[in-house]
Image (cartoon, rainbow, N blue to C red; front, side):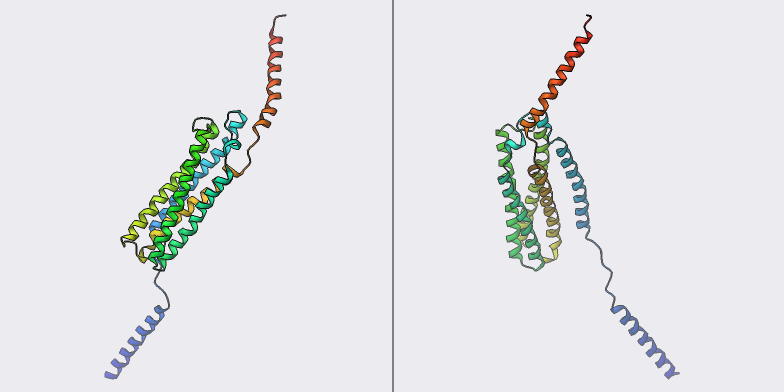
Length: 248
């Protein structure tokens, strides 16, 4: 009987070892996507539709002021080289944001602070350049109420500028928290989420810059020349109708 008990015990231990060995090769199930990251993706999805609506509205009315001959016109006020430099500055900030995330993931806190500060600085330069551009346009007569082009232009680019400003404040807040020692390597997700938002505003600006500044606008002089004969013919037609209505 003692022998049977010993054999049964050994068999049970062997089965336990076998089961443990069977589970050792399978890692624990993944916890899934971080809830904060998921919420950010949902927000960016809704923001994409919002900007899509603004861009579509702008494209619908971008030529209306030229068609109605209500200056100032885009070709008269846009400074493409200046805006190109501003766009380049914002795009470079995406690179510094990537370097900031890579730094905290490696535990390089000094690098994290340097690249966060650089990203916030580049974003601030972009916003400052946009304010200067808006001021220049206003002095040249383009305001929010000057014509349809001005309204759609300021709404679209102004909302994007507001997004960049929020991103700069977010980065400055992360920098302050890091300087106080509250952003260890384990909290790299906070930087990654901020990076998602920052890359989003950069991509949106590429689209806005292309459609607003790079897509050619019609020539107002040509539009006026083409519109004049049509207006003349319309007046002639009205005159003929009036003559036909006379009682003689």
